[in-house]
Each structure stands twice: as structure tokens, then as C-alpha cells.
Image 1: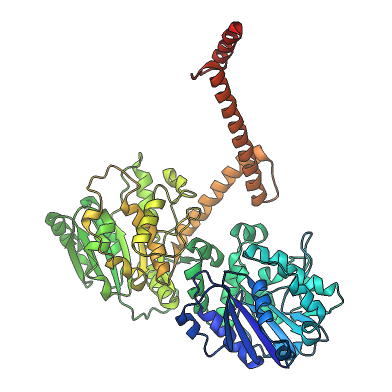
Image 2: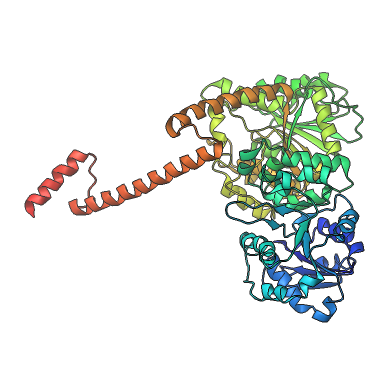
Length: 621
């Protein structure tokens, strides 16, 4: 069967990622001619990537979506040339794979007695009819040379935004031709799944690949709002698919990371793929044979914390080097005498300026040593003295230490994680939720978003930073990192003068707090992801605490809003109430302004005062 393929490509940055090239490479043996049509302008270097994969490249003059691109490509091709082919394939960049060879797909589908076919389908709902997923549609000759085919495209409207594509193309193509008597079929039968969910390719991707020989998966898996995921399942969809592809196929998942880290927000990636590592603190998970160099970087300002820091430093492997920063010679001598017992570790103590705290100590004071190591652990003498009760700050320090460096076995497990996950850049503890830190969750940016954005521009960080989405940042500034993930930060020519003088008198809103939130975005810019790290004992504490907090909040919400069926309905109900209150407040504000205008521009604190004033005004009218 001779096939003519039209592949639509779109990328906001105009970058042709490897997953596109791989797809086209594996498709090429089954087609005779491939047109690559881009919805954005491509620079010469991106076009060169396509030389061995495509026969022709078109670029749309204006940004466009798949249907208009297909229409343009079909208008350009000579009808006599097209009649030499048995099938036209309409393909687009939202299809990833193949994770299984295309051979079975094309051998099976060439036996279909149909006019068009696809790989998967949407089963329809109350608003949208059943349709074949538009990322891969094959059209047979008797259809594409028909007047019906010409009529469909001649009346097709312009689509400029992705959100209109499903309603104007994807959902109409199948029904339009079926209504005119044309027959269709899909390669992956999901009729038995239609009652469970109308979109199996999004929800049952693992089932389709593992048990139904589906050769591809769709990019829309990575556009799921996590609220929607929580509304139907416990979040297992993508992690289970990822694990299966990693262990049972030869599909290079590094292509997935390359694209996601460039285009998506780190918060979304972390949720979709459940990027949490819960490691035992008393058991080594696997044989420890890493050949990577490791160091502990530590800042000590408070002498009464020297013993605590030494305690945790003692958990580093014997071949790890230890670097300690402090601000005076007197403290250096105290630290030196205290840490002598940690031999055979190499220990170096560096004096730094007391300006910028632990952040400048790491990025300025220790920048000359970072190039020597593959993995680095950074901790400091955390006290959080601003808390009214000392135990609150002590618990925050415990939270950081115990999830970063609680034992030798835990450290070895972390090194093993870095060894086996080459795209892992940072391991950070989750935000604290006890005491006065409870208000961090939902307000992770605090007063630091705009300063972080400004710093990101200066450092040419272009990945997505969204005020509505929290940074997966090491709040508390203790974390593990891969040198290559953060190395660029050490070359940004920071100076001590860039930091406020001590004491700052503030606990938020400084450049230190902006940098603290920028760490994961620097790693992402450099092609690495950030994940949460917890030891197994502390994970148990978190589980107890989170359940208690959800329980308490739910009881109050249910009393006020009723016991609704799921979390999404509860949030919608609260949002509606908020909107009603805002509307009421606006009405009251306008009424108050009218009263003030009537009474003269004066504030009256009580309703009684207003009534008395109105009476007096009326008596003079």
C-alpha cells in the first residue's frame, strides 16, 4: 500500500525535539512521501534536523493548528500526484512513539474494508459525538478523491487556537463522513472501556499499550489538570505508564524529559509523574558501588549549632569531602577542633562574609570547589529564631536535616538515586506544615515571586515560572544537587554586596529568598527535574499530619457547604460562594458611595449614624 503522509508540527519555541525525529524515522519504512508542515517558522538549524526524515517542508505564514495545516498541504499537492497513492496519513506532533513497531499496525489495517481509520477513538459524551483521535488518521483513496472530501475542506474555517481544534476538526471529521455513508474503524478496540471513561487513550494508556498493542501514546496525557486526575483516580496513570515504558520497551524516555523540562512547569511535571522519593534511613536499598565524587557543603554561623552540624556531617561516606563556611577566625578554630573526629574525611573550612547568610556562603564562598564533585549535599545551622516558640523552628530544622542526611544508609541511597536517574537534578524536602509554617502551603511564593522573576530574567532562565503554581524549592535551603544542574548559578557573578547587610530585620522578601525559590528553575533550564525526598520514618509523620489537617478542614467545610461527592465539587461550591460575596460587597460598596454622596463625603461608622443623617437631610429638602 502506497502512503502519502502529512505531519503537522507545532512548538511555541520552534524547536524540533528528538521525539518528533524518532517518530518520523520509525514511520518512514511504511510511507512513500512525507510532507512536514510547521505551524511556526523554523530556523535553519531546526530544518537541518529533518533532512533525513522528510521529503518536503512547508511553513505556515501565521501560527496555525493541525486542521488548517492539513488543508494547506492538501491544497498544495497536485491531485494527479495524490491519486497515485492508496492512503493519506494525517499525523501530528501530539502523538509519541512508537513504543511498539508500526509493522503490526500497518499489516493489520491494510486488511480493513473501510474508507478511513485511526489508532484510537474518543467515545463521545453528552456534548461531543464519537470521533477518531486526530493525531493519526488514515484516509483511503476512494474517500480522498471524492467530492465529499473536497467539500469538507473547502468549507473548513480558520482555527488559530488549540482549544478550538477538537470542536471544529477532531469531533466533526468522523461524524461528518460517517453521516455521508463512509465507513471507519480503529486499530485499538476500546468499546469495553467506554463505560469507564469516554477517552481511553488519556486514561487507559498503559492498558492500550501493554495489552492491546497500541504503538503510541498521546501528548494530552501531559496536559491533564491534576484536579481532573484526582477526580477520577489516585494519580497512578502516568507513573505506571512511565515505569512500564522504562522496563518493557526500548523507547528512550530521555526524549520525554527533554521536551517536558523545556515546555512545562516543574510543579505540573512533579504531580503528573509523582516525583517523590521515600527512602529508608536504616537500610541500603542496593549494593553501593558509585564511582561519583560527593561532597558536603555546610554553613555554620551559630557556634551553639556546631555539635548538631557535626552530628549530621558524620553520616557522609568516608570518601566524601566536607567544606564548611563560617564568618570569623574564632569560629573557624572552634569548628576545626570539633570536627577533627570526622577523619578520614577531608575537611576544609572557609571564612566568608556575614552577608547573604547560607545562600552567599554556597554560591560565592564555595564556588571554587563545586567543579570537583558530581553530587553535593548542602546544609546549614538552621535555627529560625523568629518563631515565637523555639520548638517550631527546631522542628523545621529537624524536618530539613532528617530528610536530607539522617544516616549513612540514607546518603548512600540518595547517591544511588542520582546514579540511576540521570535527569534528576535536585532533591529537596517538601514544605513544612507544622505550627506557623502551615500557611506556607498555598502561599509558597510568599513575597518573593516578582523578585524571583526579575532574577530569572537576569540569569536568562526561560522555563515556565507561574505565580499560580508553587516552586518545587528547598524552603529552608537544605538540599542535594547534581553539579551540572546548578553549576550555571555559580557563574552568575554574584557579589556579597548584592545581599542585604545583617541583621536584615526581615524574614522574607530578600534576594536570598528569591534565590531559594529559583534553584529548581535553574535545574530545569539546564535539563534536570526536581523531586521531593523523605526518609521513611518522616513520611509516616507527614501522612498522619496531612490526614489530620484534611480531616479538620473538611469537617468545617462540610458543615457550611454540605457533604459533596468529591473535592472538585466542594472547591466549585466555595468559589461560587466567594463570587457571590464579592458581588454583594461590590453592591454594598456602591450603595455606601451613594449614601456618602447624598450625605456629604464623610465616613459614618454605624447604621444609626447614617439613619440620623438621612433624617436631617430629608428635613431640609
